Length: 118
Length: 118
DNA sequence: CTTGACCCTCACATTAGTGTTACAGTTTAG
DNA sequence: CTAAACTGTAACACTAATGTGAGGGTCAAG
Image (cartoon, rainbow over all chains, first blue to last red):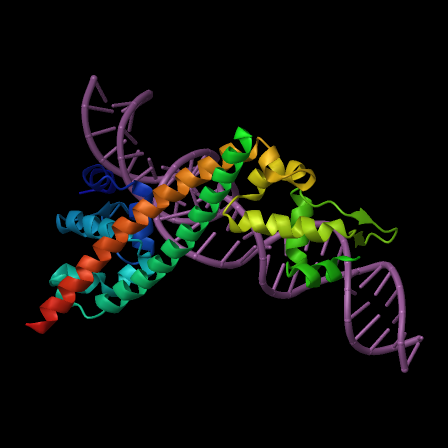
C-alpha cells in the first residue's frame, strides 16, 4: 500500500510516517516512480511505534528494541527492561516535581481566597 | 549595579537577565556606554520572577501580573487567581497522564521480570 | 599601551515530533 | 486531455528558556 492508505488505516499522519522512515524505524520499499510502498506488516509496526511513543519513549529509544519486539514477545527483548526502568525513574521525578508545584499552587490559591473573605 | 553583579547575587545567568529585559519584565537603565544598570530593587524582582518561573508559569503569564505583585501583596492582585487555577488544572491533567504511563510501565516491567523467572 | 575582565548585539542551537508550505512529478477518473 | 488527488523532497515553524559563540566596544590596573 502507499503512504496515504497506511496513514488512513493507522491514523498516523503522512508526515509522521515519513519521519519514521527518516529515523530508520519504518523503511518502506520504493516503486519505480519513487513512491513508498508498505506491506501489511507495516500496519502492526506503526501501531507498535505509536504504543511506545505513547509510553513517552523517544524514537531513538524505540529504535533500540523495535526490531526485537516485532519478532518476539516483548519479554524476550532484554534491551527493553532498562529503558522502561529508566523511563519510570524519570517519570517519578517529574511526578514529584509536579506534585510539589501543585501543592504550592493550591496553598496560594487558598491564601488568595481566604484573603478575599476578609 | 551592572548585569554581572546582579547575576552573581541572584544566581540567574546574564543571558537570562537580558532575556527578561527582552520580554519586558525587567527593564534596566542604561549608562552612556550602553551598559545596563540595575538598582537594588531589581534583586527582589529577579527573585520574584524566579519564584513564578519555578511554579511553572511562563514569562508571558508572569508579565501579566508582575507589576502588581511587586507593589502589593499577591492576594491583592486579581489577575493572579485565574492564572493559578488554570495552571493547577493543567498540572493535574499532566499528573493524570504521567500516572497512567507510570502504571503502564510498571505493569510491563513486572511482566518482563515475571517472565524472566520461568 | 596592553592585558584581562567586563559589557554589547546578533543569532544559531537545544527537544522532538508534527504541521505546514512551496514546488514539482505521477496517476487516475472523467 | 485535463483536473483532481496523490506522491516526492526540502525546509521552516512550533514551545520556551537558556546556552553558546562570534565579533566587537569599554574600562581599570599594571
